[in-house]
Image 1 (cartoon, rainbow, N blue to C red):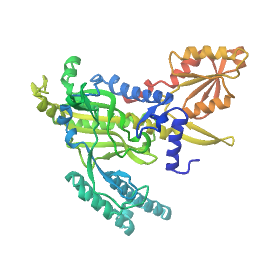
Image 2 (image 1 turned 180 degrees about the vertical axis):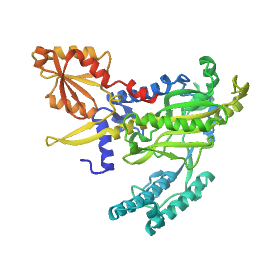
Image 3 (image 1 turned 90 degrees about the vertical axis):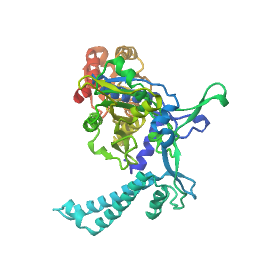
Image 4 (image 1 turned 60 degrees about the vertical axis):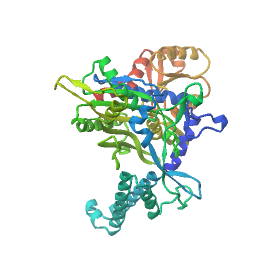
Length: 513
């Protein structure tokens, strides 16, 4: 049904608007680039994602507590964290197309294409040889060796350039690899230069007297500056975590791929404070735990993978991304970082306040080390939308369906009277009014029942309840399941129990315990 990934992504974007998930911000004024509004069903799906994350992270852990810090913070916060001096992207412009790109993304896409070439050669060989040995093929096939050697050389140069912050070498790699503008095909590039991503504004009534402050580029620093406040008031002992869901802002110059990269976005972050020397053990623990969280939704494990960072951030001693296979390739969905004690040490130095914890078990004071898990709520939303979108032929007609995990679906159950007469609407409203206390429901009388089913399929509603004339005689209704379209009669008194059991988030949470 869907020709390729590029076509699928276009359909997902179109579907998101047509069915009330995502709108372009300020659309009547021709929109605001890389800024989006969550529409009626989008906000429900997003809230369900946040609920699943919060319950799994905070409710299910006795040693993780929540926080909600302000978007505006003292400007010294960002000096201490390094954002003022080092929060930059390496950007490059194409002189012909006037398009701007991140130099590191161009090189990484090139490396991915080289790996794809190797995999294609392997797939060809598999079809030719019944007793195919992939490892031997990789080490003996001349074509594969040539591609792999070239890829490894470029990779080594790239990693060194990143670590050395060598912008000239990044451009030279782009030139040497003959990397072209992805859209225009031109290779006429400017020099690479750094661009700071923070939005600045003024604090105060008179602009000339106002101090420059920043919209936070991440939510983590609000947790770090409140570390001691939270620890003392919640009486937590190390190891413990602080979780937060909140907005962050980055002046992304290269903002494409729909809501994957936006200027205003939402993060779900947890900072886990541990004893020095124990951070890498917890780093491994959270890698496993977070991957399990994703897979518990039923996502195919082939759609997710770990990707170790080529260049570890200045504050970290280990970093890995959980990547999801979007229609435009494997991209970062969540990051797990061992941040050492950098942040607390910096804030202690810049504020003059001690950021130490007294560990009564070892009778010692120290600055805790931190392991961070940070997932983009908007990226998770996009991943779920892309993963769920499907088209199939049913009775010579195309059915578009969002096969969302039932616990995340914006509407859990829709209630329909078969006809708009004979007392059926009144009976259907009785069912709706009971269910609405427990689940997000939808009621509709308009159009033929088949069309109503199709609309609910398109927004991902897992169950539909239909009230017909038989309901009035034997007190049974029809329940229809989204994915299989199968229907069965059930007693009206069992509707709430059956639906509640099918959409219960606790079933998934128990698998994570």
